[in-house]
Image (cartoon, rainbow over all chains, first blue to last red; front, top):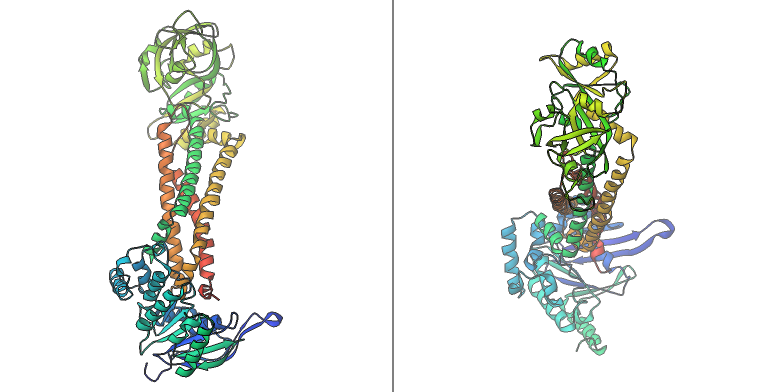
Length: 248
Length: 387
């Protein structure tokens, strides 16, 4: 991975629909991210965050512009190749966890490996080890519904990391959780997720977790309007959040 | 992933049992109604199957089914016997006559008169008496169901008092002539559901109202090695009568009931109802089950599940539900058949019926799975993001 950018995009646009009904969700995004970083995409609802993260996760195709994810252009691939790219290179943490309710926690964690056709016993062994790392070894055989929201998100973190992805996409990972639990979940993402060969992209409205990011990209009306990088600016954002009473 | 797919299905117990119940009930309705239909229809040609000695059945050309007796002249028997290639030809009388019972009651009976010399056509299983007993004066045999149900005898002088089944030695009157029960036979239930009385041909003709034409049917045995098709052609050409193999005659009888009555439509509607129940309950529930799990399929799609993998998952869920529902439905149908006495309800579970039910269940499951698969395949993984 050395020398390769995790994300490189230049002039990315995305338009939904055609003609009169066309909606421009992204209007020319220029952005790069390096492996080892934690980057937060923030902005108001409807600003284009979800579209952007979907493009970064190789789920959605861009309308125009240049894009490279871990050195490759996903839009040059067939659908099948993109699916396999996601399977190998991308990890997902969802706002609503999306743990399959009818199967055990350990099986949920093993899903990315099972999708790759790896041996079931070995996959479950690896899942159990990851559950130890996220502190849920004793709940391996439980059903997700038996766990608290924070515990479920920890399971989702383990699931997102089990196949060692190059890009970890976290979609509002704390918005379904209370403040303290959200902080612990973010600490876990930072501890377990941050690797020199991995980029963590975080979409969030939650100002209480801004300080976990190395950089914060503000998205507004389909454009990245500002990127906060320095500790000073991050501290200022944090302070503003304190003032609003969002961090106690 | 297939194991996970199955766990997803079995883990949602409310929906799973709903799907299972729908498929089981649909299979039960389809198979049970079809089995009753087949049982009922097979009764229409019971007499043909009860008389395995005959290679050919010779009838008046206008006869439509085995109970549609169109009497022939007695000379027809000699004309048939004169055709080359025949080992023997026996007369058979068949007609509905009113029997007067000792208690004064009257009962319509199906009277079968078999060849006086050979007694060919007498039931093979005798519960009381021997076949030779039919040669005794005024002797008749009755079949056990009729003896036990429609031909009951009062035990006391009180006609409305307790009754017993008719037995050997009892008497009844047929067209003012005495008939003595000389044997009780076991036969397959007939479609007409009236008691069947067996006697000799000449005695049966005597019981029947006077008629110039008394020969209902002629049973023919071909000489060994004789080509039946050629023999049929010869009989038809030389006598002007029609000769059927037992299979042809059974089919002709079956065809009459199938095409000339509303029975197939009635049963067809019941079977269609079973199919609709399957579609409405099981199909709908399976589709709902998929919709409920759509976000998990979407998450898996985002995580790299291929369309083929998702298709396999939905297919294995449909297959599992289908196999279990079909198995339970067929088991319940078989149990139903075992619990209901054969003479009460016509029920014949032939090997074709499970195949028909299987096809019906496959259509239900395929239909429901196809809708579900379509939904899953078209699912946009972006939907799993909060937006």
